[in-house]
Length: 418
Image 1 (cartoon, rainbow, N blue to C red):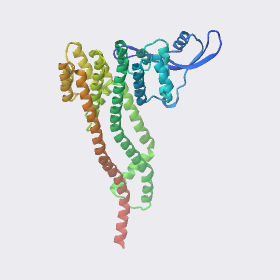
Image 2: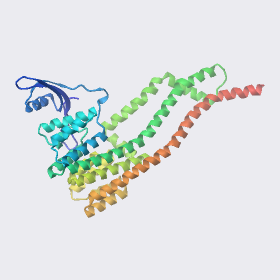
Image 3: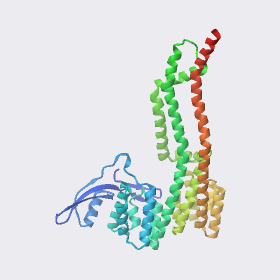
Image 4: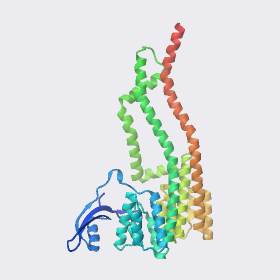
């Protein structure tokens, strides 16, 4: 990665940071120290070392490990946040709390992340400023809530709520991913099996049938013709799916119109679309409840909510609601007009607006739709198994019948001749 400054949707600047390996010595030249630091540039590392009373000797970018490094699991983050909340509640100073977290971290990824945050804390930054250097692991929601907790003197409570929020979000995300992964995995296996049969197995039968010198049944001839084409154009069969998947992902990430179309129709997919919508509604309400509990202004909350929705259509609707609120309107007015959110969700949220209990009502809506997602995923898994087995059986069965038809025909001829 190269040092860069990226602009977000709202025009704010976010500095990208990288890992550096440094070597420094004491001002009198005695003893050398080595370590790692996460910073925007090598000059920033040198400045940090000088603030610590060290003389930089060498600073270089840390090599990137294969396959993106160790990574930090969300479950590890939740545990670390809970531990930090407990220590702060017990009166342990922030720097000492992170020193304890670093010493207790056993996995390389989380150890490295906590160590980087500790470095920024030692440089005099607040916790919200320190975690903001790691947007991959701490989004705007986390940073803004931590900042609110620091200002209000309730950082331990905010961290506990964030841990609960991330834990529930993790459970919801796993459910939605499992709902999408299961059919995708089965479909992939099905395609691979068919390709193997068509390229490697069918040609063996075709060679056998050609020695008979007899006219093949129509179904058999069609399958053999397809097999011959796939065998002679195997590179197209192999490359086309890979290119199609890459083009889809590239277009989805880079082209907002394409993303809008995909996100709109993804919500209309039978069964799966319902799960995606309910997951987005649950995530929206869970985040809204968490931010309201922390006292985050509603306009700032809606701006953040649009970015965690995971769907461009829902994001557009939330941003429209934010504009209405900025003009003195209500959150649910635009949500009802757009018709993206389920009616029950908007009605319950409207009651929360009227009674001044948005946090409580949003939390109840989130609980309801999280349970709905769980039940929907279980139903889909139960429904998909027989459907997939039938489809796979029809495809494989057709190929088997096509290959055995000539044998049956020969057997009938021999029996009739006898």
